[in-house]
Amino acid sequence: MNILKLNAVKASPVMRQQLRAFSAAPVWAQKFRSEADTFGNLQVPADRYWGAQTQRSLQNFDIGGPTERMPEPLIKAFGVLKRAAATVNMTYGLDQTVGQAIVKAADEVIEGKLLDHFPLVVWQTGSGTQTNMNVNEVISNRAIELLGGELGSKKPVHPNDHVNMSQSSNDTFPTAMHVAAAIEINQRLIPAVTLLRDAIEAKSVEFKDIIKIGRTHLQDATPLTLGQEFSGYVQQLSYGIERVQGTLPRLYNLAQGGTAVGTGLNTREGFDVKVAEAISGITKLPFKTAPNKFEALAAHDAIVEAHGALNVLAVSLMKIANDIRFLGSGPRCGLGELNLPENEPGSSIMPGKVNPTQCEAMTMVCSQVMGNNTTVSVAGSNGHFELNVFKPVMIKNTIQSIRLLSDACVSFTKNCVVGIEANEKKINAIMNESLMLVTALNPYIGYDNAAKCAKKAHKEGTTLKEAAISLGLLNEEQFKEWVRPELMLGPTKAK
View 1 (cartoon, rainbow, N blue to C red):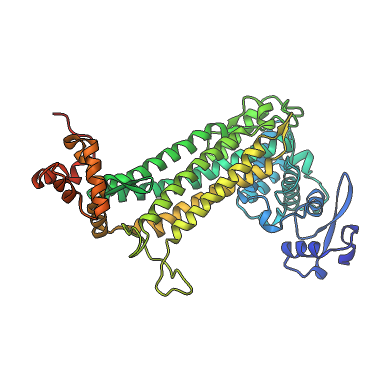
View 2 (view 1 turned 90 degrees about the vertical axis):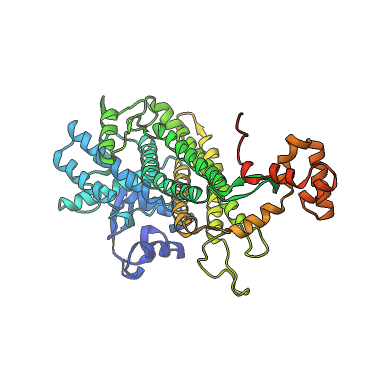
């Protein structure tokens, strides 16, 4: 077929690029079949399972290119949903042959075998209708193929009447959003953050006896152990895991069964409960039907909440990565209290330079997640009347944040944390020079006199001991007895 006649429009460079992306054959050699929707006939690449509505969306929403396609976890979640719906619909009268063919095709979607047949970008209708129809068309045509039928015929498996039976895009898309987010959190994020938390905890134990100077306001403070410092990071990540897990009960509530506006029109009684049970059986996660379908369609507070927990996690990781890179700054002119793994050359002009690249990667990821949180928040606030129409961008950013945080935690663990070593020589040198050891003298000579010691030592470039003795506030033996860093690591024991 002449490419210039494709879909009755002149083939633009963009159209040709799209076609190349989905077929190994050169554009001029591609074959097409005719598919129809309620707007009329369209020519669809013959080797693709999608139909007219997907093709129309490709033409109408040429925004962003291949990198902006719907995330894979969402497509696989749709496969889970369509499989579950077909299983339940067979109990309500769907032809067994048709139903089983839908199940088999949906399984291929779940397994990722058909990902090349889902070309649509996030930037489409805010309900995700085109992607729901993309899934319906792909499963329909694949099921038809499995049954020996003709692609595009919609016989014996119709994308709307059979694959989308008792469903609406308005309840399928939010259901797939929740399923995708919950699976990614359970299977990817929680294990990754736990891995990092445990690695930092091991370092906290390893460093438990190394006394160092603390810092507040970026200025010298009283001592603590390096292990205590790292224990703070451990607690942050433990809380982060708890926060994310705390959002899961709302993500486990599914909109399926609400259909168009939440009333459940065109479903059967019990369909919503049975579909949730079927999805739970496939995923091994405790999904259940949402108690209020109107909320489930019109608002996506559960996604906003979940991403809020991701945002807190990003805040924690930003602090941890920054602390570690600052403590590892140097090697000679920085703090240099930590020796970080040297993974690659750090400069194209300065020979021998090595940089804290894992910390930098982590902090960039955290910045992206914080930006994503703004988008999710704005999108979540725009649920108008019975439907939120920012669904695609909400799940895109949520899935991206989960994936980035997960991968960054694993990378940071194996390429940085496990190889961190304490530079005890530098730690001791810095601690012994700190003026804030003077805090230990407060109970003995009073705050004001202790301040005089610190200011005199700083002004004259002497040690605290020299300043205190010269002021006649104590003698050398008293200083040695009272200023002992190892006794400044916690509350004074009761007598």
